[in-house]
Length: 330
Ligand code: SF4
Image 1 (cartoon, rainbow, N blue to C red):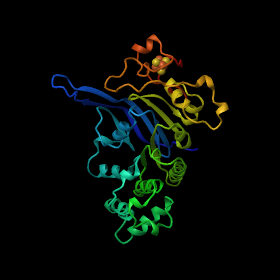
Image 2: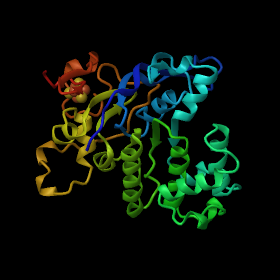
Image 3: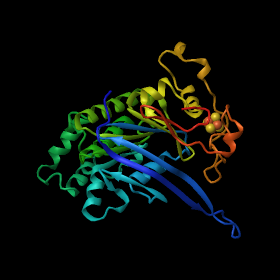
Image 4: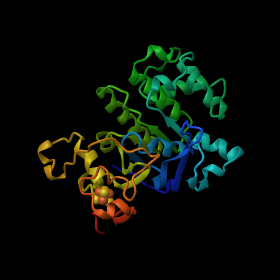
């Protein structure tokens, strides 16, 4: 599996805190630390998987990268430009160059529009097709995502498609603008297992053909192994471990990564090392009140005194493999 190339996207110290009203007049609003000092980099033809349980801050990180919300601190550079400072034409270009695929394709597509209309409008809006050629361009894109022959699908409505076909239409919409980066937020988790592999294969072949980068958000490490080049594991707003996919899967270091891997099916269960298994207990704590020191200490089987008071920093151990844990000595 290839990847990397020059970075298309760099996030530096990305932080997002939300003020949440307590609902009581005499109580101060609480601060929800959804994302805290997250830095990551995605190469031109690379897939970076952002992994973690629900509530770990993955989707907020994606929304910051997509410029759907403003950061409290830090910045996002897309092809060298600060995304949150873009205005006018450069912002319009960013909206074209960075596309998104959502988890639920049924909710992502307008039920009152045909597939042709759904794909036509962005092409016209961004000047990538004229009125006279747009139908044949849309047909070509549908063929690329495996909806072939395209004439059978063009004038149908979303309700007439299966979940897998709808996600192909969402992929078609995302690639139609020839983006450089696609943010895919749990794009296969709502699909049947049999369809998942097909959508992942489609995304991989589009990456190879078009030189795309993906930010792939998921809680499912089996999916990560199939598609990612790099992995960043998030817990309660922080990246706790990151590195090349092989390194993360063969030598996971952070107890949280190991716990996620413990519940991931492996091709040969006999080779799964029993001593590496960690079963997570309890729920992820609230980001409105994160634990002191290491945020994972309330669930970590290896917790030490220092973990309760000192926050571990991410440290580089080998070839891009970083981990934030007092247990791991560099
Ligand atoms: Fe566990 Fe301590 Fe490492 Fe946190 S720093 S993961 S509590 S051993």
